[in-house]
Image (tube, rainbow, N blue to C red; front, side, top):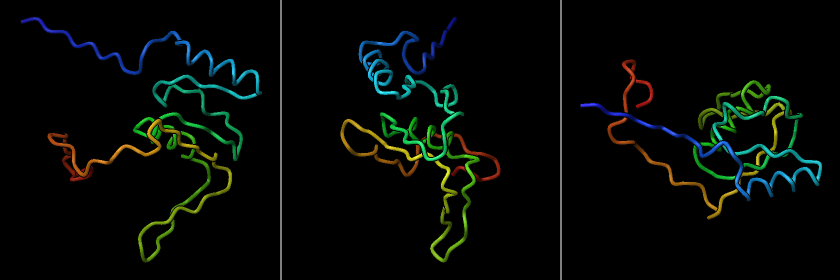
Amino acid sequence: MDKAVLATGHGSLEPDEGQLASLWHADDHGLRYVPPGPAAEMALDDLPPGAEVAVRGFGLTFCDVMRAVTLGGGGRFVPTPAGLRYLPSGDEPRLLALSRGGLPFLARREVPDSPRRPDGCGS
């Protein structure tokens, strides 16, 4: 039996009207607009220290963007009696999480049938 899987990912390559309006607004106000897509493919490497970055959506892409713009920023984790605490370097961007509903997606305690690593991590 022949089968095919088409995984399209994050939308089309052509910007829609809303994205074009955001791009034009950013251009008119001296801002930069990065279209939606996988965080690994976004042009985020040249953000100045302390930049304000608005991220539309408060799900996994937000987490990916947060990781991309903070990793290697000079902050560090220190142990405390309550667990690890992040001490920022001050060079990290200021992230503004935007959500249509105003709330983050609810986290799932466990994803059924998720793969487990042999060393027990990720469980």
